Length: 508
Image (cartoon, rainbow, N blue to C red; front, side):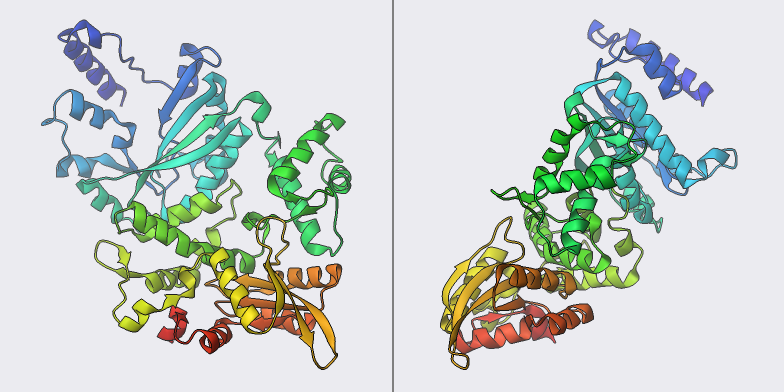
């Protein structure tokens, strides 16, 4: 490689000597270790942007063009000599599993490489500067490694901003697709260097902000007691930070900010889960999947809008990862490693789309009945609550009011109804779930907790899907009434004949 590099450097110097003065000194070529290069060429906080390949994991096809040498030569030197051809493609792909790279065989060593690269970048990049990594990861490694990039970036003072897909229209794409564990998609991951005051709080490799949020989430979920912000701060100090070497009382303000940013704090300074947030990194598998299925229809809708009505399975996974990935490695590994869950997602897509050779397109309705009717899954959550509010009024409920928004603690509607048998006016709370996946035990537990705490007489959970075994058991134990999609359609048909439907029920 050294020989090839020197030959190229000589070629470049000869080429540039014939060019106008504008080209001179525009490019510096160096064949060296990046740590040495950064140390020898840049002072601290002097660089605006670094564009690089990250360390590649074993068995992932490494494409030399990711380094942008060939692209640069193609556009600025000679389009004929440096255009892609079959011979170049055959020589270009290198699988990074060389026997000489013994230290690169281990996944933990690979993660250390990611940590090291961000550490050295942090020394030279300015505040508000950028790191852009051109990546092409294997399917089974993508979500796990993306999480590690984000986690190690945060540890070293960066924040993950976004991802830009690179659409490729050359034979390399087909070459890559031949590898079972590779997505046929290349992308740039973009990271921003944070100001010192906004950096994440890490102790060694532990993200203390994550640990604090996880503790608060689990405390709220497991207890029927309502906690105020000062109580939680004291508990965190005693349970999470008791062995911390860097903690002092000045960090109380920082802990309070973490709580307010991640949870809902009311005027009494009481802390609740924020209904507008997905706490997927703290939840059990059941809760994770049902929340995921709830947002997939919205992701599909957005993909169809922004990609001219066509998207692939890879596109969907990338959008899911952007919405759910927060730098903790567990997020979507269960889906990627589970054929049944992967199949469920594909079936879900087919409820809204038709599969073609190029990808998924929007499904067209074929009958007049479907055109005149409304699929409940296409109504946004607040619209569905409003519809059920009207339905409750027609069913004889009084004082029906929508709650909605952060801090509603899982209660979407409240109402009263006169019980002729007991001759008393009873207070009801309702939870409305426009879900694809079946509702588990957790939402029902929360609804029952509010019923008991706030003195309501009855609780009813309404979903457009069904309930898991755990959900059905929780309904039986707590006395929360459970209405599934079929029940909801029967009630709606009673007052709005043939106006509403749920696609899955029709297909079954």
